[in-house]
Structures are given as structure tokens and as C-alpha cells.
Amino acid sequence: MNKMRICITIVLVLFMCGVASAVSDTIVYWCGKGDPTIDPAFAWPDSEDTFWSNPHNWVSWPLPDFFVRLNFVPDINDPVALNRGLDNNHQFVTDPNLWTTVIDSDTAAEAAWLVIGYYGWHTLNITGGTLQIAGYPQAFYPQDGNLPYQIDKFMLEVARSNLYEYSDSNSVLNISGGSVTGNGHFVIGGLNDYWHNLGGNGHFNMSGGTVDCNGTLQIGMYNGTGDVNLSGGIFDANNLAMTSHGLLTISGTGKMMLKGDKSSLVNGYIASGWIVSPAYVAYHAGTNTTSISASPCGSGADLSGDCYVDFEDVKILADNWLAVGANQADLIGDGRVDFKDFAMLALQWLQVP
Image (tube, rainbow, N blue to C red; front, side, top):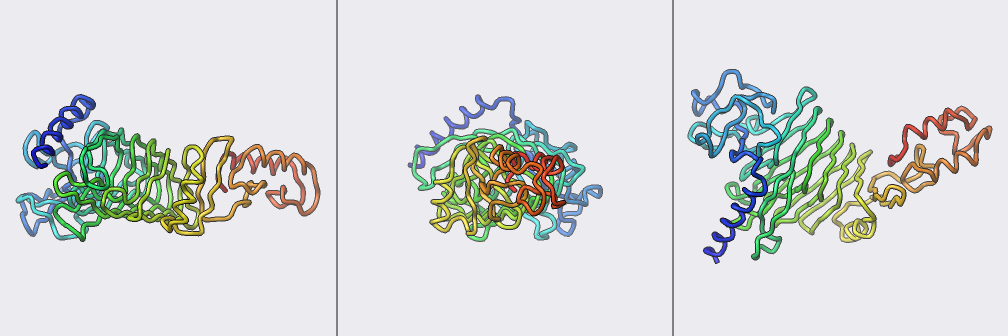
């Protein structure tokens, strides 16, 4: 079995090198400022922060040399792995502040693919700015760990596996602002380790900003665990996939938009207890999307109560045009339905209130 796995791995690696030849052969690792208590020579004096934008916070592997400090930040062709910081003996540092990365309002971050917790712990905080991910084909086990390997395109993973840290391996993605865009799947509770069939424990907290995922949000899919807390912002994806190892909690103003009619799929997850109620699900034929939100429908310019602002709401506003007094179409509350209310509806057009 191990010989078969090795052969298949070699074939897949050759295949992926051909498919993604434009992507760098070097994985760019987060190293942070290092730990001067372990090795002062490895602690760069001008690298005493946690910002993605600092070129001294990165090392390369395996080329041009093993764990060499870089003087540039990753670009759209670089595979990026965020781990706990390493000392010069390639040991994980112990200070939690050294395994945190920040993308702020001044940062335009890029990567070919991004793993948060690549065989180790890490936390990525996105408070503003942008993160663009090209997406990259990856080989992985299916959930049951049996052959054959599978290949699919991934943009981001939280907790690749717990190879080194075993059962207590945890990695976190926090988004409170900014925007994340990419092609491929968005994985919480990362892919299985090839040899140990272990998945990591991923946590994703979103309180603001936007995510546009041209792929599937996968939660707890690969023998790891994943939990998503969506309390604000908008997460837009093609699809949603979960197992009993995953949990999705939607609260506050958090919203999820999925392509196509996914209402039966989502309601099935709710019935299984994998999506925590209350979760309001609606399919919008006009844009062929399914929305999931924590608030009941009918607020704001959603006059029809279908959890979406579209032509159904325009029709209701038109039916009440120039009406005076208390009226649901009086969106601004001045006692009259007119162009001011139409302007308010236009501001919320094609949105989930």
C-alpha cells in the first residue's frame, strides 16, 4: 500500500508541475521576527512585527536554500504557508505573538494558494486591505482516507493537518474588514496529510468585509474539524459542503450567498444540526442565488419578504406610489412614498437586507 501511495504521489506531483508551471517551485513560509531568546542571529532587528507586508517576515523552502530569509513579499505566483515562527534550528517558537500574521488596510496581499497552519499552528487576522489568491491544484485523500488520491483546485486552507501537533493542532482565520477573492475551494479543517491521514482543526471567524470564493466552502471535510462563525460581512461562494465534523454559525449581520438553488442542501445541513439556527434560507430566481442569513426577511427595502431586494420590491413600491401616511413602502419614514424611497431601494438593490 505504501509503495502504491508513493507511486501515485510521484505521478500527481509531475502532473501538477505541468498544470501549474507558472507557479513558483518555492513555498514561501511565514517566519515572523524569530525568537531572539533562542537564536539572536535569526531575529532580524527590522522584522519586529506581524505584518504580511514586511519582506523580512518570510523564508523560502526548498529553494534556493533551506529556510533562507527573503527580502520580498509573496506574489500571485507564490504558494504561501503560514506556520508558527521558526528559529535557526528550524524549531517552532513558543511565543504566540510570533505565529500571528496581519493583513491591514495598507496591504494588497497575493498568493498562488494559501495554507494557514501548514503542519503547525497559525492565526491570520485580516482587518482591511485585499487578499487575492490565484488557486492551485492539490492532491488529497477523500474523507475516508482510502485510495485513490483526488485532485482539485484550492485557494485557501485553514489547518492543513496535525502532523506535528497531533490532536491539539489549531489554526485560525479572522476577517473583520477588507476583501478576499480567489479561485478554488475554501477549506476550514484542512486537507489530509498524505501519509498519516490526519486533518487539522480549523476555525474561521468573520465579522466584516467580503469573501468571493469561486469554489466551494468546505467545512470539516477531510478528517479534521472545522467551525465557521459568520457574524458580519458577506461570504459569496459557488457551493457549500459539510460533514458532521463541521459547524456553521450565522449571527448578527452575517450573510452567505451561494450560486444556484442550494436551499434543499442548506436546509438539510440545518436539520442535521451542522448549521446553527436561526438561519433563514431563500432562493432568488432573478439572480439564481441562495442566501443564508440570521435575521428574518422583510427588513429594509425587502418589501416582499423574500430576503432579497429585486423587482418584486419595485412592484410593491410602485403599487404604493405617492401614498401618504403609514405605509410599508415608506422606506425613509417621512409619511410619503416617492423618489426618496426609490433611492433607498436602489441603494439596497440585489442585496440581502
